[in-house]
Image (cartoon, rainbow, N blue to C red; front, side, top):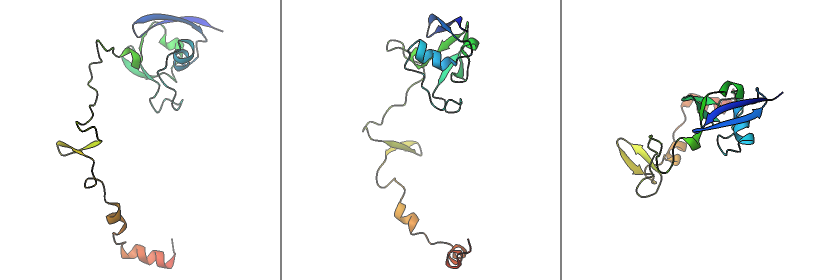
Length: 139
């Protein structure tokens, strides 16, 4: 049994005729043909399907579309435009364009010197009790 359900999506009023227990994610992707949000785990754990419903982050894969009736739904596409970008700054790449990681307060490029030394880790001596266990094969 289908119902007409209306809600505001990214600033525009949309009306769909779907089953009221259908997940909002399926309505957004299949009925309204949006490319986002994405399907992730389907269990509302990964966050790939997150939308804002009346300003609150909500997992759309577990929310029935009937619960979104007469609400304001915002997807990633509705967060900003090139003329009016979203107010949160996006992380910027390092000036050199290479991957960087934070060390203290300075950003340093990821180089051979800053990577963990695998050889030193492998050559670390094993404690004697562990060595004895290995020799006797008790574990």
